[in-house]
Image 1: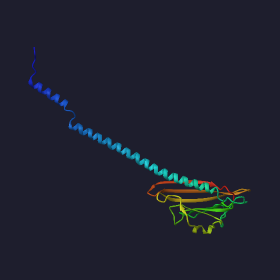
Image 2: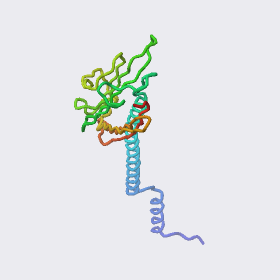
Image 3: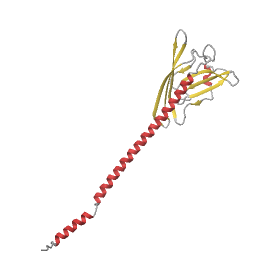
Image 4: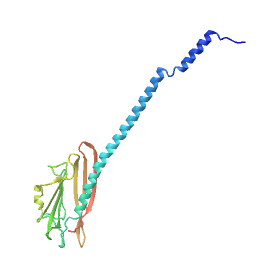
Length: 223
C-alpha cells in the first residue's frame, strides 16, 4: 500500500533541504572575515617587530665594529711609539717626560701623541709624528693627525697642529668620551708604561645606540 505524505511535511522537508544547501550565512562570513583580519594584523605586527629588531641590531653592530677597529688601530700604532732605530733609547717628543705623551684634563679633552722613526726612499730616516685628540673644538669626534718629517713635534705646539681628519664618519657616529690614562712601570733595568684608553660613542641619528670599549696597552719600546 502506497502512503502519501501530508503536504505540510513535504514543505517542511523542502525548507530544511534548502537551508542545508544555501551555504554559509552572512554572520558566518563576517566572523570568518574578522578572524582573517586579526590573523593578518598579528602576522604584520610580528614581521614589523622582527624587522625593527634586525635594524636595531644592525645599528649596534655598525657602532661596535667601528669602535673595535679604532681601538685596534690605536693599539697597533702605539706599539711603534718611541722606535728609534738602533739608538740606545726610545724617542720622546720634545717637552714630554714619557715616550707616549698623554693629556686628559677633563671632559672632551683626551689626547695621545708620540713619534717613531721610519725609513725613507733615499736610505735615510725621518720621523712619523702622530696624535689622536678630542678637544673642545671637536667634542664629538676624535681627530687623527700625522706628519712625516725630519723633525719632531713639540708638545707645547700640539694645539696648533693642522691637517687632521676624523677617525669616524661624522654623519654616522659621535664620540661621547675619549679618556686616556698612563701608569709608569719601572724596574732595575727598564722603564715602560701602561696606557689605558676608554672610548665611548653613539649613533648621530639614534643616540640610544651606544657602545664603549676600554683597552690597556703596554708600551713596547722602553723609555
